[in-house]
Amino acid sequence: MNNTTRAAVLVAMLTLPGTLVAEVLSLTPADPQPSAGSLQSGLAVTYSYPSDVRTVRDAKNALKRRSEQGPPLQGLSYEDNKEGEPMMTAKKPMKVAAAITGYIKFDAAGTYTLDFLNNDGLELFIGGQLVADYDEVHACGYAGETEVDVPKAGYYALEATYFQRKGTACLMMEWGPDSDGLEQVPDSAFFH
Image (cartoon, rainbow, N blue to C red; front, top):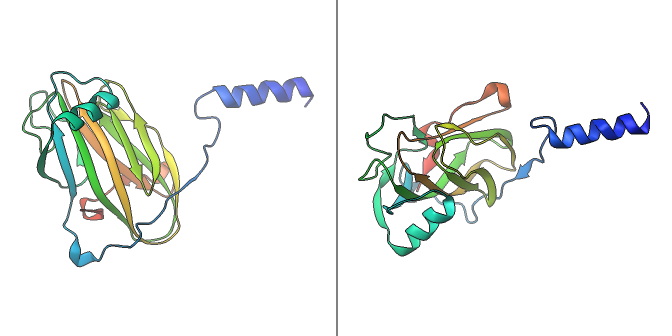
């Protein structure tokens, strides 16, 4: 392969989606690790109900201005609902911003592939790393796979900002050893 061909292949790899393997993100375990007895199942959530929300930034601003604690989430297993149905544990089905916090427990060290389905926007950190960033109004869709290194079994901090503008809503998390082995993360993996 000559230099011109190599350059063309490199340009294609850098510009075509899915052709270049992303860097594996190394997660940082919670330090200190919380004791299992001090935790409750699910994730803590705080809601805001702005007059409109179109971006994660809008959601964060709304949450700073006015927010209220909501009932805990069971986990990240909220399938695409029908328009007008309740959204997670919020009081309203639309124009909702949520700050979600807690821990996810990995039972084993290793490399995991993570992906998230969301409608609408989502910014989510695990173990100090941004693992999901899908910041726009859209139908229920995948945020994009992220490969993470979990250095040891245990609890990892989870922080997310999510928003639902109008229509249907979903928020789900999948994990597995690779793209072909993704499964929904069980609610039993989440704590606050």
